[in-house]
Length: 295
Picture (cartoon, helix red, strand yellow):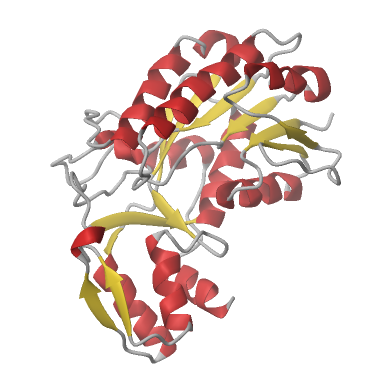
């Protein structure tokens, strides 16, 4: 029997890659989001903040697995209340609708965030690390995890904590696409915040494959880091882009781009994910940068 997956936020950056990954593995893929898609018969027009729209999931799809990616995810969002409305209350609305459906999903995978670890002093962050969120986005995601625990038995909850990732199609307000666009345009300078912050970056295609592998094994009640186990500074990304393109760029530090409560270093441990799924990372960051610069 063909397995059905519903991906919320399917029209977003991550959602498109996740849908393609599942489709390539033979799943019947349904998408869901706030924008109407009348030309796509396997797409539901839903709004997490309008619970009455969520009944469509049980009525029309009855998915075996739900991958919940829809969220407010830009950490520098001007209005922090958006994080709590969408990430916390919106997710609760979704979980309630799924749990009361005639045929609840066998597994519900929720995208949290590695930001829940906050400014940890640990060199490598495992899933057992203390959570100490340092901004509203991270607080909203950790609160979502606690809400999800109350639905654990009914919905086969699996929680993921993605670290940073990037790829073709990510919005230029995020740092790596911004850097890529400046090099592609051969700009003379770029304005950034702290370039010495280090992040654990993955290729979005590796992240999408992790979601599909978790959907196949359905490890109910587990939490997984989605990461590469390597931390890279923005300064290093600038250097790699310069080597790839042969173009040098002046970096100007703009104080307006320096965020309060900045998490200086994030590096994850993926041993749990890899041991459960047999996953091996496919793409190095230089490969990802070359891919992005060529598109």
